[in-house]
Image (cartoon, rainbow, N blue to C red; front, side, top):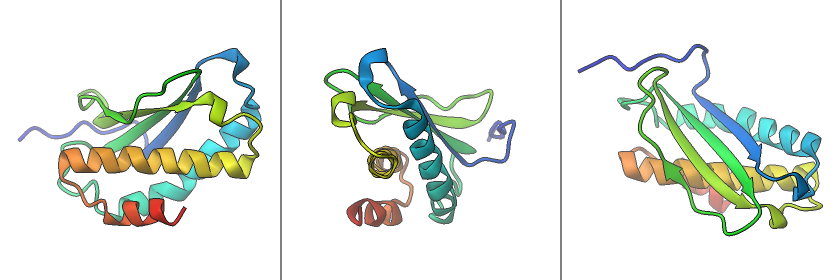
Amino acid sequence: MTEVARPPHDRKLTIGLSIGYPSSGIPSRFSWLAMEAVNEELEPLFVDTGFLTDAPFFWVTIIIYVVPEKPRGARCYPINKKYGDLPLEIELDGTDLRGKSTEELTCYFRAAALNTLIHAGKKYGKPIEVLERLLAAQ
């Protein structure tokens, strides 16, 4: 078995955000604060689930794309051989996010990240029960 590539940092879960169009109406400061809060909240919980135990990847990245129309669901991409991450993405409808507070955006991004992790967990046979409970408690 080949050793899984290691990331250039100690993170086990990273969540990024891309607002794909300038007229989204979502204040950048609010969206970034919300996304960072979700990352800080979910990373330790994610590690505690055992999701990474015996996984063919060392860490997970999620990119949340805010799009102007018809978002697609969560997607998994091939494991990054250089950095050892499992790249995931999800698209959100930007019209649903207009005028939301930082707290509301945090809830929205948390649900998106959990849905994406659950999708990947099913694909790779990883434990997702804790993630499903967190999503249901939202």
